[in-house]
Image 1 (cartoon, rainbow, N blue to C red):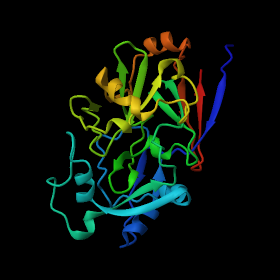
Image 2 (spheres, rainbow, N blue to C red):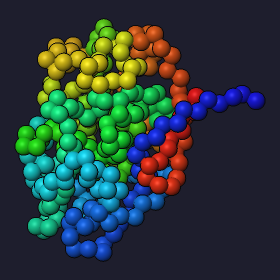
Image 3 (cartoon, rainbow, N blue to C red):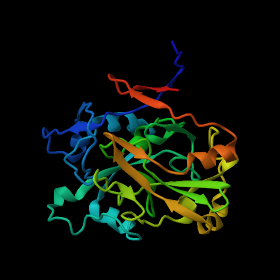
Image 4 (cartoon, rainbow, N blue to C red):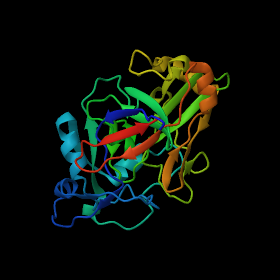
Length: 289
């Protein structure tokens, strides 16, 4: 019998489906009260601005490591005015209470960015980010990030799981790869996915994380990624790759060509299979070679 090598990766991971709680009139309480269940089908559509969804698990995990900030949907739209994608202002009529949401700001140093501390694994769900941040993977498998002019990097909760919610770039010479967290303008719909054709939000050049591809397979941190001062020419000399789609009841983050990265890193990226555990929020994900 062929031996299967198992690598146990322990981090915070939440299930696919979040059910709804209507037990409190308090917006913060609605974030705190949550019932979570696991289900196989991929969400057909995710409404990131649905503030009647409550996020107890996110609240409990993240509160000790940052702060929850109350914000309006118009504030988010104003922050994200540059670029194409789904907004909220013209979608529906709103009451004052429906305007209010909570976002989370982590306690980090000023040079920190999402998807900077950790590593990439190539899996049957595409490229998956394994976070080394102290709060684990919760904010990388769910929700969206953006660099707010007022607050810095903040995270908006979501309820659809993906291996990573990022857009990519690879330079024409295949020597450098970059990625950046998707903003709330990246709205998930299973029939269209999130691609270059329906998402074109322009981040600041400094928001991107770039690495020399010789380091792509490494455990990454601020010492392994390039200085933001080097990003502008790399962005100018690269093509954007945004390709997150539903396939065989899974959400796939395709990203850069694995063959090109294998050539540059000198490493073989065996396509690993993810298995999701059930139980507590400190879940284990087993990656089978």
